[in-house]
Amino acid sequence: MDLATVIGMVLGFALIIMAIMLGGDIVMFINVPSLLIVIGGTIAAMLIKHKMEEVFGSMGIMAKAFFVTPSDPEATINTLVDMANIARKDGILALEKVKSDNPFLQGAINHCVDGADPEFLESVLTKDLEYLAERHQKGIALWDGAGETAPAFGMIGTLIGLVQMLASMEDPSSIGPAMAVALLTTLYGSIVANVIAIPIAVKLGAYSKEEQMVRQIIIDGMIGIQKGVNPRMLQEALKAALPPSQRDME
Image 1 (tube, rainbow, N blue to C red):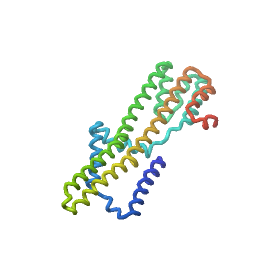
Image 2 (spheres, rainbow, N blue to C red):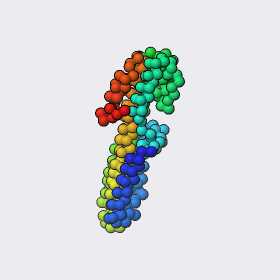
Image 3 (cartoon, helix red, strand yellow):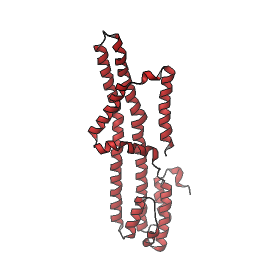
Image 4 (tube, helix red, strand yellow):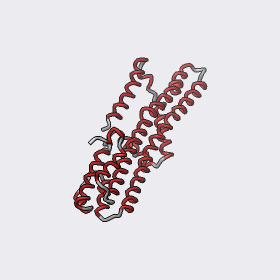
């Protein structure tokens, strides 16, 4: 579980609730019509922009920001170097005994053992990486779009409330509810965008880039193994993907 995502979201809502309670009754900040305008409008816009199955799957995509296990590029490099040593000592076919929990790496190993040449291997793995990036981008765009849409529907709700208020100026009892809709929809839209949708999109983007980096390391490492690159040289080349502070750590 990504504790940073959990702590950040809980802290964000806690601060908002604390500010509300310090200034008055929390009940006055609950308005069903405002919620319907923001939440319902955001979902409606998502359905227009994306396929229905993608919208219905958005909660599963969101869960990845909480439960995805971060990739470990250092461990991947160490695994590839170990494989390079095996291949250098016993030949490429010896890699058949190597088993990995990473499906992408295991697929690359299988291609090598089956006799794929470096050009074919690089082409296949690169295409796989490109398709992964496209799939991830769809999920990121979905939540990024929700972050843009929620404040817009908050503004729509504000305009509706203002029109209702101005149309009922002769009835003082109707001014309060109309003003509540006007102000609370803007608040709800801002909360949905800045506490949920946009941070989720950014976190998903970070995880996607990390996974793509690890897969690129695997591609470069497997090509190096096939070409018979010295394991020590291969290790140094693959470490270029790491931050400078981690490159000299053994």
